[in-house]
Length: 463
Image (cartoon, rainbow, N blue to C red; front, side, top):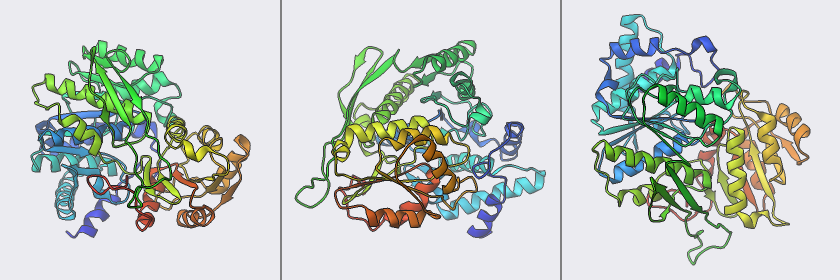
């Protein structure tokens, strides 16, 4: 089997990232049958299982980074991918190779054909992730939920710890239209007797998660109750250092866990929402220590400072300042604009253009997202991405924008055209932000590789 043939098998499955599932499509029986045919690889792994409305990918990346710095071989399973599908399955920060992916997809195809199974795209991805982590003998696997929690394909594991990040309204047609109902779906990953770390802060979410944890006799640690954080934002301006690269002090977080306050730690990701995610990650680290894992104190600051999670308020260009993001719901949009207000205050002054390139999927709260964003940008380029049929036509985005805000906008049929149009209109002291979907960020990120350099981090990532 060639790599192309392997991808043909994989992408030939039903893909609920490209079209929304129905409620009756969400079940675990098919996933269990597939894993059983493969020898149940997930039962041979130590797993940290991470769910949440937003922040679950960043929190997973932070945990994997800290564990690597502690000397553990860490697996990381996330979705969707940004540019290359191999990004979904990583060991020690290295994506699965094409050769490894081809071999494992061939193995999965064999049991699918032999058993007459019909797994979805994500079920195949999950099975390949578990197999890869077993073959590479990872010490611990950080597994991010794809959608919801209770019926997500990853929810077949018995984790060391279940982690739930923040809860907000998203995927309401499947998960329910209240915070409590969504929290109940996310809390479906809680297993009897297994500890839980929660970053949920709204009363309804906390009460729901606490109730489920209590019924399942799962010890629970909550942000704002058992642990908390203090945050100092970065201050980014257009001023450059002697080498012409952007230079500034990274943001800092100081986490208090069970009454003990740690030293301030620099963060590799921007925004107070990332400080909250880091607090969840550190509470999880402390919980892992209680299971017997040795995680040196020094691994924490190294892991948080060097963590890589592209397209989350990632600075990819200097003049104009260019931010790549993927805020896909109201809570994410609010986190974006709050970070713009605190970290990029210089770009809120009069005379500075703040340009937004926006595209979004059709199952999102478009009025809510655009209402938040419209107050913080002076011009918008509304477009669509080519990687998913769920992309909203830019004409519809313009109609929604007219109803919620009076920001000048331009309809651009394709994302690359929107990128070039924004670059053409922005001056060197302006700001361009790309957001709305990971599909948009993934389509435009390769076009940004030739931009003016910004100060590189340890791994050469834009900083």
